[in-house]
Image 1 (spheres, rainbow, N blue to C red):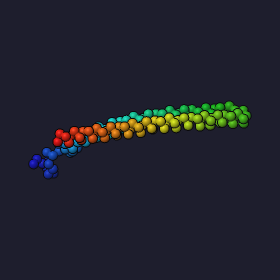
Image 2 (image 1 turned 60 degrees about the vertical axis):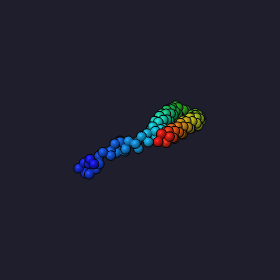
Image 3 (image 1 turned 180 degrees about the vertical axis):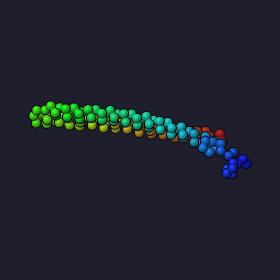
Length: 134
C-alpha cells in the first residue's frame, strides 16, 4: 500500500476528484445529458432576458415621449388624450409581450423536457447494453 505522510492510500485515486474511473464512466451519459440540458437552458434564458430588455427599453421610450407630449399640451383635453393614448398603447404592448414571453417559456419547457427524456433514454439504452455485455 502506497501512502502519503497522512496515511491516505493514493493508489485508489484513479478518477477525477478521487472518484474511481468506473463510477465516472457509469455517470458519463447522465452528465452529458445534464450538460446538454444546461446549455439549452442557458441559451433560452439569454433569449428571454434579451426579449424582456428590448420590451422594457421600448416602454421607457414611450414614457419619455408621453411626458414630452404632455409638456406641449395647451388644454386639459389634450392632456387627457395624450395619457389615454399612452395607456391604450401600454395595455396593448404588455398584452402582446406577455404572449411572447409565454411562448418563449413554453418553448424552453418543451426543449427541457425533450432533453431530459433524451438523456434518460440514452442512459437506459447504455445501461441495457452494459448489462448484456456484463
